[in-house]
Image (cartoon, rainbow, N blue to C red):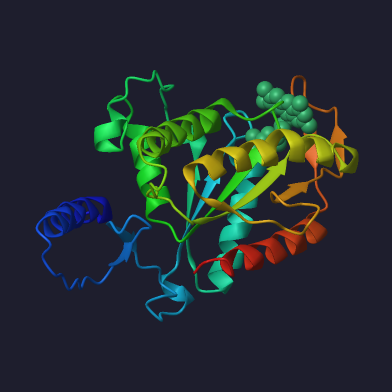
Length: 269
Ligand SMILES: Cc1cc2nc3c(=O)[nH]c(=O)nc-3n(C[C@H](O)[C@H](O)[C@H](O)COP(=O)(O)O)c2cc1C
């Protein structure tokens, strides 16, 4: 049974118990109950740290947000996700990379059916990735700058927002399925240091706004880079008939990613 199905059943059961004023002791290995300010119960997934387990049981999802096919295995988003994965594996933390190039999404048309199901009735690929997000202890979004963000990333943020917004609109105490999940945001593009502030404004801040709406917790790198990090190219070569070729100085970038990964992991409660 998936976590979501289990959660649905438990939440229904909680509602019945509450309506009948039935005392309830709730024991389940992956969930615990909380009471909100209106004294209604809701369920939260038990995070590995709360179970007292080591990092080996943490699940991290890295979303590689590039749409671009021509770069193949040289996609910088994909390479950055692999670097995160390597760092996490040193820390015995499980990591899954979701490469958006392999997903086909449909834009949200506002049919409102997700109000009942919390899933899109028109988009199995979106549901697949959303399920992965809900089951993660932390996520990383690694996105190129396309002035502003890649279309597929925009489509998933749009749908996650719609699912949460419709519930929040009816009940301002609503806690989303991804409530409190720490999120690291890493942007990059074809520019060097001079472009980084622009990447922050266009990519990191845009993604952070969307994550805030769905109740994920964007993790700052520091007070200036409060919506994640942005990474520069070292140089861009004009050696391909169509596309620019980007070169990187990987050592300082990996050091920065390593620091940020540690900061994000420390936000898992
Ligand atoms: C449609 C499109 C628009 C882009 N616009 C910009 C841009 O405005 N500024 C920039 O620095 N790079 C821009 N780029 C370059 C990409 O950010 C860069 O090539 C990045 O490495 C692509 O990600 P990937 O390597 O993971 O595919 C653009 C790329 C594409 C495909």
